[in-house]
Image 1: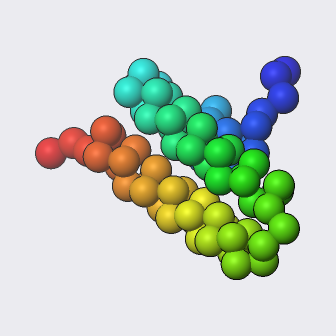
Image 2: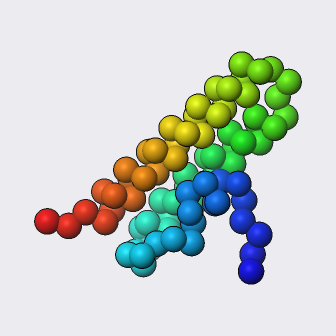
Length: 75
């Protein structure tokens, strides 16, 4: 099994019950953004910058969940 990045774990990259390609693509895009913030957080020596990265990661996870919901919405 492949080693997942922090972002891929954070978005649950392999959990896509709908099996929609759009969901997979969306999750990967958010995972990439989360990985970028996590890399910056890891490299930073500023506690405030680390905090800001953590907030951004949380907000990206929230946005990803809403985005997936929009792709799977049915009337």
